[in-house]
Amino acid sequence: MSSQVQVPGSVGIARRPRRRGDGVWPWLFIAPLLLGIGVFYLWPIAQTVYYSFTTFGVFGGSTFSGLDNYRQLVTDPSLYRSLLNTLLYTLIVLLNIPIALYLASLMNMPGLRFASVYRVIYFLPFVAMPTAVAFVWRIIYNGDFGVLNYLLGLVGINGPYWISTPGAAIVAVAVVGLWSNLGFSIIVLGAGLKTIPQELYEAAQLDGASRWRQFRSVTVPLLTPTIAFLVIITVITSLQLFDLLYAILGSTNPTLSKSMSLVYFFYRSGFVTNDKGYAAAIAVVILFIIGATTAVQFRLQRRWVHGG
Image 1 (cartoon, rainbow, N blue to C red):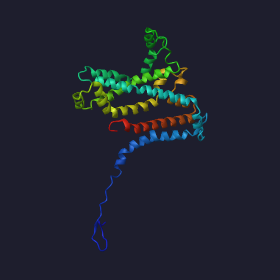
Image 2: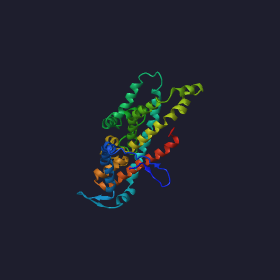
Image 3: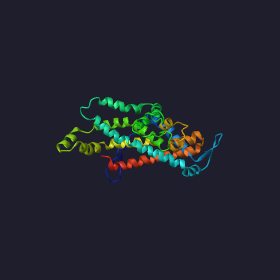
């Protein structure tokens, strides 16, 4: 093929050579990843959305029922109770971030001995099995022989039955969640602290800034990307609360119906009452809440994240 276009009465115009594509090789390399995402993530999501518009029979099989599951869901008090419990749990667990920031700053102080040992001790609960953690905290929360009520009794306070009292149960579980996430936040924030140039602190000292002013004007602003990451991860994992709640409270706890989370509400509908169409509708609502919450956080972080 000629590389020039001949126009009558004019000189030839050079044509840009066609760029050769990369062929099928890039697609072959990413095909296993795309196949895994499609089979294990996208297809189950599509199936769940479809099942949310169906009603399952007692002996299997499903029939299309339109928006009936969603109409029933918006009038179900269990949805709002589980949503409030999940939000309360999330807010309490988020408190681990300022606590971890304070502890990570202490561990990052020059000359502190055994700082690595302290980090390992704080990180151990994060890698421990949730069932083992729950078993230990069930002993601590025991209303008759627990360590917590014993310590409260020393100062004249009569502690409640923490894991069987409505209102106190979800708070007790949230405290365990806060404690479990503390180590991960300390490690992430500690890594962020090491990226802050020491010259900034030296310049602040020359200007007469106190340690608190250095922390407020240097440390916190430069750590806002790390803090934003922790907030997003903590909110997503907290909205999926199930195993810790189930392990601490147990399946026969009388307060479980008043202390359940959104995911436990889904579990109860799908696997206890065997209403899989209704459970699918709950799962779609949970997916929407997590997606909307994450999108709002990404939107808002532009206002308070340094360099965001």
